[in-house]
Image 1 (cartoon, one colour):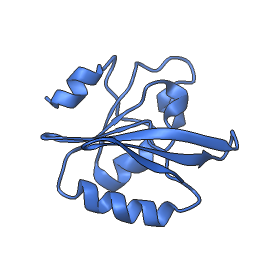
Image 2: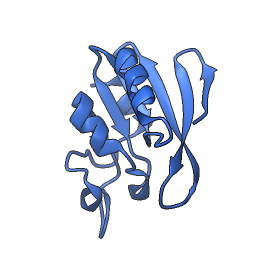
Image 3: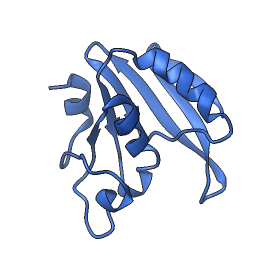
Length: 118
């Protein structure tokens, strides 16, 4: 797991993708209206420590998950279960997001609409 601050309130982390057997990236962004997690993955190499830290960061805030493409659902369902996150994703098609465990999604959300948190 690698965690890097990109800018104030904007972080990128990596976690090992079990199927691909390589590290993939996710993004954390904190706004006045809540927290946005982009394509979140729980780093299997240190999942519990990562979740304890994330719990502290998101405590009491609305959590939004932005899934950029259906194969990036990764651990979005875990964020819904743990934080009651609202998921923003393109409309599923074929074996899209709903087939991978996400039942709450909004069609064609843009980053702007997630960041401004309606």
